[in-house]
Figure 1 (cartoon, rainbow, N blue to C red):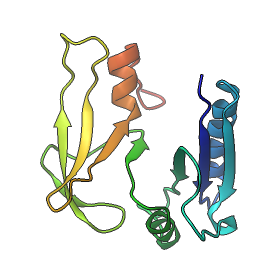
Figure 2: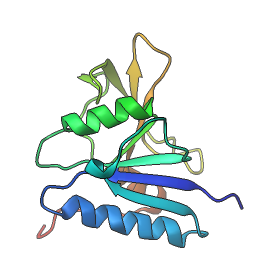
Figure 3: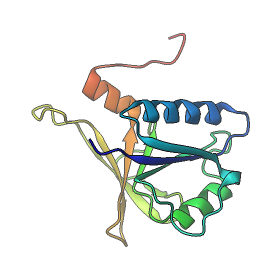
Figure 4: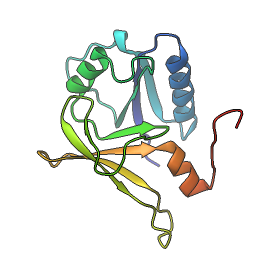
Length: 155
């Protein structure tokens, strides 16, 4: 089995994103002894793109979106290929600006119940570039693949 090299960079004001980032790194390391490194954004200075198979970014949620530092980091790393989030409130064909300011349209493909392993897919599609960004929505994925339905606490 090929081991993955994973870098996780996070920014955390109150410590919650840091706790989640640490738990993710622990899980990555436990899965087949993958190589994983974790850094707070202010600890990272890039002189060249990082030599990792995957770069994960933990965003603080109190800002309502990526901070200037996170945007700068993504620009230094290169193209963003995927986003993992808990939920997605965007509708099919809704236009948004991506994390670096490019206009994109959300394309949602429903689960194909006749195809094993299928799940609802979200893609941020660019009108000016062949580079698209998959949005991996955990809530839908867990429901479609594992039949787990999550509800807010107290409901």
